[in-house]
Amino acid sequence: MRRFAASIACAAFTVSTAHASVSAVDDAGNTVTLAAPAQRVISLAPHATELIYAAGGGAKLVGTVSYSDYPPAALKVPRIGDNRALDLERIAALKPDLIVVWRHGNAQQQIDRLRDLHIPLFFSEPHRLDDVATSLTRLGTLFGTDATAQAAANAYRHDIAQLRTRYAQRAPVRVFYEVWDQPLMTINGEHTISDAITLCGGRNVFAALRTQVPTLSTEAVLAADPDAIVTASPGATAPDQPLPALDRWRAWPQLSAVAHGNLFAIDGDLLSRAGPRLAQGAEQLCKDLDQARTRDAASKAN
Image 1 (cartoon, rainbow, N blue to C red):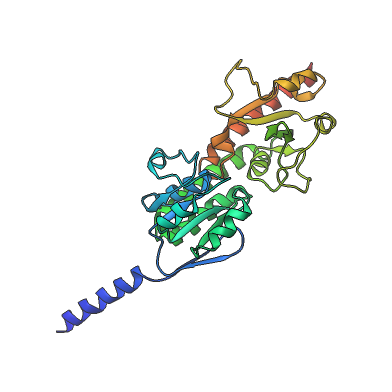
Image 2: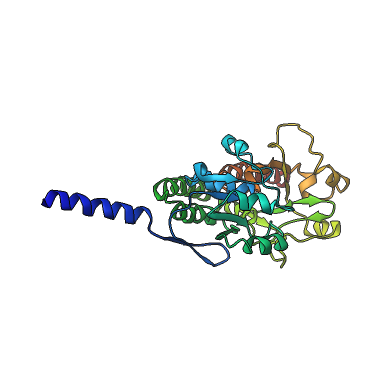
């Protein structure tokens, strides 16, 4: 009889644990509480999709947006729009119990309409490299996949720590990161890419600007005279590969970056998306900036 009672008690505990509420703080500072771990999740950004899969929630993903193409399994997930326009009726029909929103990438009007659906929203907007790891563990809490999420966070932190040990104290390289050329746009110090530049021993020449993705003039870049210019591309820089996105700067051979051949393009999916693959993008950035150091040192020696 006692054994039977103990079995009943154990079963009751298992059921109550399975349906226990879960909570996590998102990147907007909001506490997101679910009555039970999320089972039907929608992602509204490619980087959020990558975070969801890495945190162990891929099987729970029922909808996502255009350009959510990694991992390959994400290509099979139904599309519910893009960062400019969302199909609110489709979202409601999918009956999600959690929506992961790109805080500054999804239009505010769309976010306001999402709130009207009364579905919990988790805002994702990493600003620092380590925010990727904390995003993984927070999402793991909401999915009930803590072990998977923690393992992914640990692996990511290990990769970042290795890069920091190897590159952070090397001779500084002054970097201009070009987000877009028309209009000319860059990043300030509150962006994960700027944090990656610092990790590699670089210095973002426009880190002090107030807007996270500011517009600036060509004259401002000429005045800053960066040692290296970096941008995102569909693939990484290859030897002797033309860089159409950066070729315009060759019109100013007096620029240090141009004079020393320090024009670099890095796979945008690796560097621009604040997901676990950011460690791979940072590694490529560190290698490029180290090449810039070598070229600059050789120029000074001559």
